[in-house]
Image (cartoon, rainbow, N blue to C red; front, side):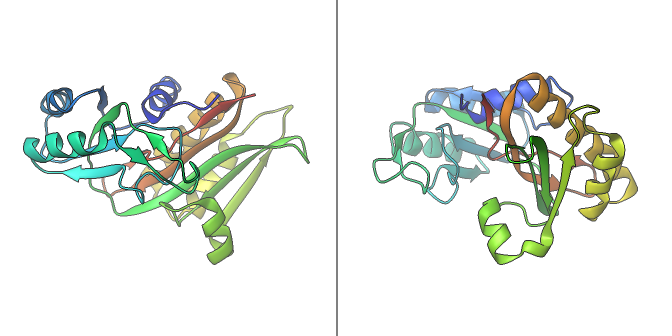
Length: 220
């Protein structure tokens, strides 16, 4: 079962994964209200459809004023987004996710997938976030890190640390990233998922925070 970004974030936050504050809106007025409740001066307005590649299709807008929030919401709601996953028929946007935007240094990639050939959970990470994993594998395969999880023991903290250090994080960020990685693993396991993806996982000087633009939790 594919779910929307805001639903996935709610699930993952229950497993200790840090996500930026946000709220759902079904109208431009609601979008402005959510932005005022969140506070700050920058917001991301995101179309909620079951598809990746929303940003490239115009389904993600960064706003600096409430007027921009209202305009972005009006433009998206009721519009049809066509991505490389929807096909030419596209999908109509019926709801938005308004999220407090945070500054970051770099976008990383983190994904969990059920590898049926080896009957293991495969954890994939890369320093090249913000793009499809297929593109990363094709253009910069050397940037991809992988770990296989033994079903009998589950994912271990040393495996999460191995990935975190491989992503070039500092000691403080490694500790935070380990919490995120292990939280995602527990979500994958307990929700009986076939894939969990955070893209991008952002790196900042303050903390390693999951700013998820696509997160799908697909049940078997």
